[in-house]
Amino acid sequence: MSKKKAPFSKKQIENLLQTQQTPFYIYDENAMVKNAQKLKNAFAWADFKEYFAVKANANPFILKILKNQNFGADCSSLAELVLSENCEILGENIIFTSNDTPANEFEKAKELGAIINFDDISHIKYYEKNVGKLPELVCLRYNPGDLKSGNNIIGNPLEAKYGFTKKQLLQGYEYCKKAGVKRFGLHAMVASNELDYKYFVETAKILFEETAEISKKLGISFEFVNLGGGIGIPYRPQEKEVDLQKLGGEIKELYEKIIVKNELAPLKVFMECGRMITGPFGYLVSKVLHEKNTYKKFIGLDACMANLMRPALYGAYHHISVLGKEDEKCEITADVTGSLCENNDKFAIDRKLPKVEIGDIFVIHDAGAHGYSMGFNYNGKLRCGEFLMRENGDFLKIRRSETIEDLFVTIDIKKLKEF
Ligand SMILES: *Cc1c(COP(=O)(O)O)cnc(C)c1O
View 1 (tube, protein in one colour):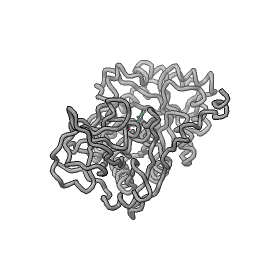
View 2 (cartoon, rainbow, N blue to C red; view 1 turned 135 degrees about the vertical axis):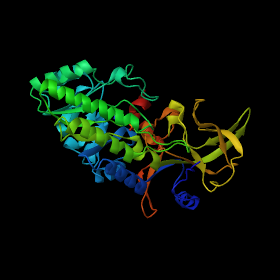
View 3 (cartoon, rainbow, N blue to C red; view 1 turned 180 degrees about the vertical axis):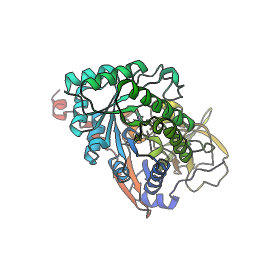
View 4 (cartoon, rainbow, N blue to C red; view 1 turned 45 degrees about the horizontal axis):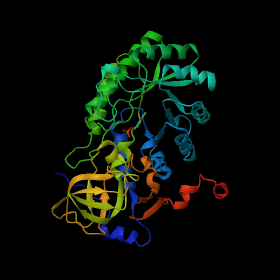
C-alpha cells in the first residue's frame, strides 16, 4: 500500500505555528506546477488547452500560478469571472460554462470576451433578448443521455440538469449559424472524480463523432471540443492516479481515426479539470483539541466541516496523517470530528490512527480542490487562512483567516443599535 506523506515536516509546521494558528491550508506549489506540465505533456500532440475550473480552488494566487502554465479559467459565476479578470485571465482564455444563468453573468462574460458555453437551447434566445447579438464563437454543452453511463458524484446523464439533448444540439447549431455565429465549439462533462481513464476516452469519442456528424449535416466547422473536467484523484492510499499518457495517447488515436480521416483537422482539444489540478497538492492542517471516549472514540480537531465539507457532503474519504507519527502503528480506531452542532461534522469515521495526544498536528490530505472553496460560515465558524509552500520551503500567506468582524460586514451596526 502506497503511503500518503505530507511534503512538509513536523518541524516546519511547528515553526509556522509560532506566528500562525491552526487550522490552515497549505498548497505545494512545485508539485502543482509539475503536475500541470504532466497534463500538457499528455496532450503535446494536440492544440491543447486546460481551462482550470475555478470553483475547485478560487485562490487568485493559485490562478496566477496556473496562468503561468498557460492555463485558462473555466468560470461558472459572476464572482469567478471577476476573479479571472483580476488575475488578468481574459478573452478566450476564459470559458464560461454556467447553468441556470442570470443575464448579468452572460453580460460580464461578454464584456471579458469569454467563450460562452450555453447549457440549454433556451439560453440562446435568452442571451439574444437580454444581452444582444450572439458572439462570433459559441460553444454548446452536450448531455449524451443514455449514450453514456454516469458516475457517483455527477449521476446518470438522463437525470443530470446539464446540457442539450442530441436533437437540441443540432437545432442549436443550426440556429446559431443562421444568427451569424462563425466559430463553433462542442462541450460535454459527464463525470466527476472518475479514476478510469477510459471514461474520458469514451467522452472524446462521442464528441469527435458528434462534431463529424454535425459538421456534415450543417456545413459548419468546429474549432474545438471541450472534454470537460472530472478526472479523479486517488483519495485512498490504495487507489491509482489516472494515467495521463495513456489518456492522451488513446484520444490521439481517435483524433486521427475520426477527425483527421474526415478532414476535420485541425480541431483544438480543451479540458476544464479542477480536482486533478489542485486537489492532491492541498493539505488542511489542524490540531487535536480533545479526545472523547463514550460509546466510541472521538478525536476532536480545531478544523470542522466548514473548512472541508467533502466528507460530510459525499461521505468522501480523505487520508489523514499525524505529523511526526507517520511511521507509527495504527493502534486506535476513532471518528475524527469538528465542532459544528451537526453530527455529520466528521472528517473520518472509524479511522485507524496512531495513538493520539492533545496538540498533535493532523494533516488532511487531498484537500486542494473543492476544499476551502466549498467552505461556509455555519455556526459562525470562520474560514481559515491559506499558505503556499514555495519551492525553497518558504510559506507564503496567500489568504488571511477570517475574523469575527468579517462576519458582521453585511450588517449595519448603527441600524442594529437603534433597532
Ligand atoms: C465542476 C466542473 C468542472 C471541474 O470538475 P473537476 O471534477 O473538479 O475536474 C469542470 N467543468 C464544469 C462545467 C464543472 O461543473
